[in-house]
Image (cartoon, rainbow, N blue to C red; front, side, top):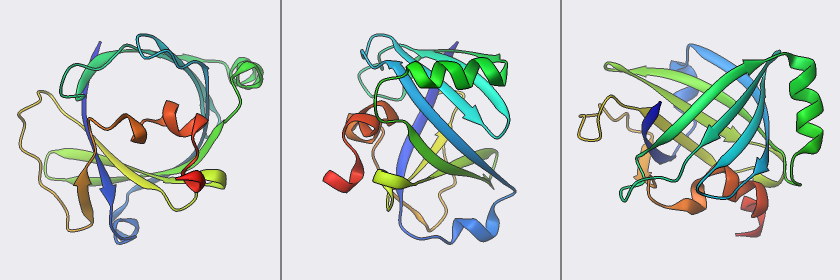
Length: 155
């Protein structure tokens, strides 16, 4: 139940031609307290509830628990979330032994593109495509919970 991931800014849309999956996502937060973030997500026609703990010193590892829930329950819970529901399109690209998830944000966060790579351990080597830019793993400004309250358009 420990998630290990690195986050990067994306420098171009070149990843789209290499993607093998594309999903529309809406997500909101019931709680954005760093020690226990509670997220509701609708991904295509599936619902999820996720609880995340605070990240370690590097920001790459933290507790994560996720459970699929019925879509009607996810829609009802999304209405209870704090203001600032995020809408984004997620693309998936294979890179070596990893799958890179690239989030293209919409609405108030339009223009922001962030890539995430889940790892087995923090020291794992990553094959980085040319469009993968600056690492922002430990910068909480790029966490979805932060973006929900502080949209990219206001930066």
